[in-house]
Every structure is written in C-alpha cells, then in structure tokens.
Image 1 (cartoon, rainbow, N blue to C red):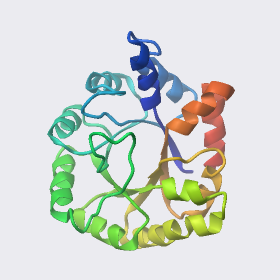
Image 2: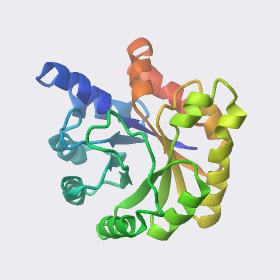
Image 3: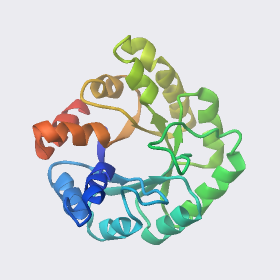
Length: 237
C-alpha cells in the first residue's frame, strides 16, 4: 500500500495570516497521524511564510510517523535538516520567490552538487529523495547522485488528467519503469487529489509514498480532516 504523507504547510499559512497560534501546527500534525496519515511533510522556506524553522524542531519532538522535510538545500535549510534528522529529506529546486514548487531538478547539470548533498544527508542516516520531472534521462542521472528515491512532480499529470488520463500518465509510467530498473524508490506529489490519485496509484509501479497538502486541506474544509484523510487512504489501497 502506498503511504500517505500529509503536507501541513497550508495549516501554517492560515496561522500566519492572522498571527497567534491558531490553528496550531503541531496539534494538527498529531491529529493527522491519529486520523491515519502515515507521514507528515513540511516545506520550510527561507522567508518562513508558512512553516517556520521552529515548527520543524517542534514537530520532530512529537511525531511518531515518518517526518519528511522538503526544500532547496541552501545553507540554512541544510543546517536545519542536519539538526532535526528527519526520516527523509526531499530536495526541491525551488526559487526563494516561488509560490510553490514548479519544476524538477536537472540532475545531469547539477549532478556534482546533488551528489554532495546526498552524501551530506546520508552521513546522518537521512533517506534522500530528489524531486524530478518524468524524464528518463533525469532518472538515470538521479541514480548517479546516490539518492535513495525520486519524487515525481505531478502537476503536468494533474493538469492533463481530464483531457486523457492515459496520455497524461504515459511519461510518468516510462520514467517509473526506468527508476524501478535502477533500484530507485518512487514518491510523488503536487496537485494530486481525490479525482486523479487512484489512477496514478494503480498505474505507477513501485509507488511508495505520496505527499499531499493543498488539495487535502481544501477538501477537509468541506469533508472534515479525519474523513478526508481516510478518503485519500482509500485511494491508495
């Protein structure tokens, strides 16, 4: 069964919009675990516009499921991850002013840099995943970095799903088969939702984990957080 990691950035965004501590990020994460989430994901950015670095430290103390920290491995991010030592770090090449992640790594161009970062996080026993577009060549060079997993950037799949799901998933399937042949674990995330998640999960071989935040939190406004997490879990069976 593919694991569900709930990204709680949107909870922090709501808290920060008003000041104070409502909703409480740590309590929400613990509730997500209690309701069936098999992991918690955060993506701290340098400007701390949603998840703050202190949130990451506070979460590490109390979480019982897998903790996944996403981000661009600039110095401050790397120091935070090496301090906190989560189960997994997901390397994302997002610019500081990006609203959300919007591209995967060029693993050929940045091979040396990514290899260095993978070695750094491995020295603390942290599993590493590299955020990728569904491109066979990028998968092959990702293998050369020494990473444990890749995470497919699934916005293109989500955007094209309604027009034709077979065509939308085709490049992901090809890249996933290459990843499997190379012994890489496969994660996925970005714009996956209750409509498109089940088909992606059934079609992509070896899918280990999905990280979902925006759609899940939006659904929870109507359906309730506990019910929503169970609905997403159901799509992953």
